[in-house]
Amino acid sequence: MIRSFCKDIYKMLCKRYPNRKIYIIGDQHFYHKNIINYTRSNFSDVFSMNEYIIKLHNETVDKDDIVIFCGDFSFKNNYIKIILEKMNGHKYLILGNHDSEDLIKNYPNLGFEGVFKEPIKINNNYLSHEPLIDNERNDLNLQLILKEFKSCINGINYHGHIHTSDNDIENYKNVTCEALNYRPIMIGKTENLNNEKDLFINSSYFDKALTFLRDKHNLNPDLVISDYIYSSILENGCYQNKYFVQGSYGLLKKYNFLSKMSDLDISLIYDKSISKRKNIGLLKNMVDESYELLKQIDRINLKFLKRYPSLSIFEALYTSESSYFSYCCLDTNLVMFNCYKDNDFFKLSEISIIEKFLKKSSLSCEYKLPHFQNNFLIPEGDIANLLLQILFQKGNEEKKLLALKKLQYVYEHYLKNKNMENFDDIFKRFFLRNIYLLFTMNRYSEIEYIQNGYDISLLSHLPRDLKFRFFDTLDNYEFLAIYNEIASTSVPQVLNKSKEIIKKLN
Image (cartoon, rainbow, N blue to C red; front, top):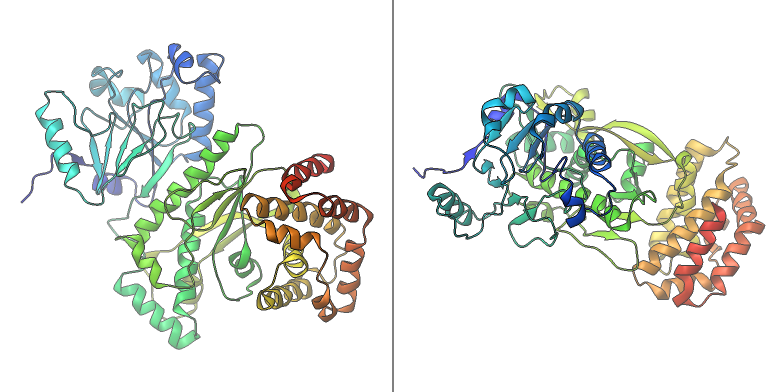
């Protein structure tokens, strides 16, 4: 038997807090004045720094979640209890080089539920203050932990201590506040070791359920698996007020409209109150958390997911002058400029397809299945997106015909008896958003295609009232003015022109 030199706390966490998210972050440095001069010049004083860190913590971590701090928590021990009382979650600390070992004796009175002097382990992942790299410290136990980590094929060392670097190397992940833009990231979830269990795709029960749904309800197993994964991603999202769902999956959950499901479109809305770097950090956290969840669902690795052609896995895209990529993730983007309004969205609570059908059947299920509540586009927003696909999508008649079919369905079932008074405003803003997305993805030939006019041939197939409604939208003076400005602008200047126009609209 191989002895582990690093304490694995995963089973302990599962027993204490089943079915909870596990978050991690390091190096808060509460009440450390000098760090503002070193790496946090965006804060005027320690009080504003403290409040900002606590605010982002509570926006991300719920009261029953688990959070592990990777050292250097506070520079004033007598204030730790006051700080922890303000912060959500079941809180654990790995001692850093600035943390007193006296915390080990007094941690329950302060608000920590555990304090660890040495690095700890959660399954195959190693959590430490300093990165587990070769060093000159004459610490036998630390050397043994380092040796153990290096022998682990799939393990990641989540560490703090490195304040100025956010460039991770293979198998190492820097989780200092600076590297994470002060927001904790999720690294997994606990199981229920007693009764209720997560239903994993590669379990025998899942195979049994898929066979039942295929034979009794004629459901495509690929669809069920895609829906289960997408539902799990949405359930675990920690930015409910900052992102929204659209695309083919959104149509399925909102309208029960089933078409060829390609991907889960998640858009994170650019927050103008924070810096560009912090916006990218929000997206990076979302991608990292989705990646960790995908690994958990499969329980092995992401290669399993490649067997399902209906499930597209893409890199994250940051829609700015440059693109940003991280790991492998469901289709995710950050929309940079202010083209959305609060009333473009509504909240929807949903469950996965597998649960819907198992509830109707005699096949019992003792497993925990994903439930979620997220932001979705209103029907007018879906109609605007679909109309833009028909009018301004270069080539691919098959995709245009599918967009037409979706458009007719949404209109007939949800908008036929509504006046759609806000549609013109939505259409203008979404048109500019699409121009912006194309530019940032270097799809210049498609921008030129848009500039050359509309493709209205398919609109003749629409119901008479909807067809005239769309013609009125295209003839709207404000939209014509926007379109003419884009059409008369040279392609290299389209990005700046779209920014300029959106500012006028808001």
